[in-house]
Length: 200
Image 1 (cartoon, rainbow, N blue to C red):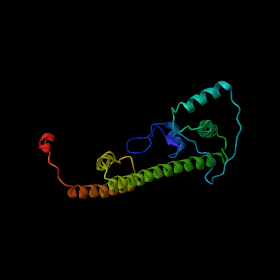
Image 2 (cartoon, helix red, strand yellow; image 1 turned 120 degrees about the horizontal axis):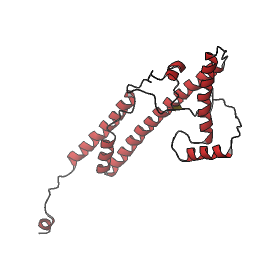
Image 3 (cartoon, rainbow, N blue to C red; image 1 turned 90 degrees about the horizontal axis):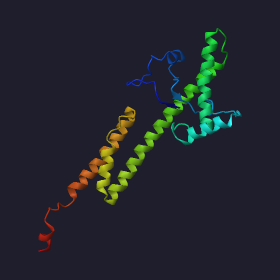
Image 4 (cartoon, helix red, strand yellow; image 1 turned 45 degrees about the horizontal axis):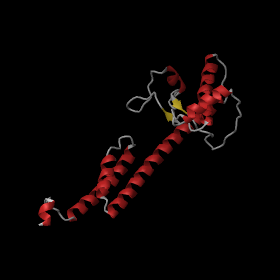
């Protein structure tokens, strides 16, 4: 699940979208939903024949990577189902028809997809921090200080992470910065003497 639109600068979704306001805080018509199972990890297979023309266009959409979240043709179908089922629920309610268990099943899938997306995001941040820590350790150990400084400088800004992850990133950077500074104090100072002078 990826939210591609519909969020304000403070991370809260905009209430200007009437569909969004009616559908609850866990759902956005702009989000791409690709989860393949229910909250318990169970799934069922649906066979859906489609026209060769539409199949070709879906193939081009997936292979063109316009939406990176759509990795397979199945992702397109799953996303379409979530949004269309929401439409059915809203229409049934508007017409005074009972939705039965359809809405609760739909809501569970949407909330579960949101949890999955948060988990994936945190796992990616955690791996980035671990990789940076390990790489900086190796670079300093091998004496590649320029590359180590480069990695520290390019990873200073972690505003895209949650606050606990930002703190962890800052700790890793501070640890290796201190190590580099300590190493620099121990290195001999080489004066900038012209090459010709050194020959004489």
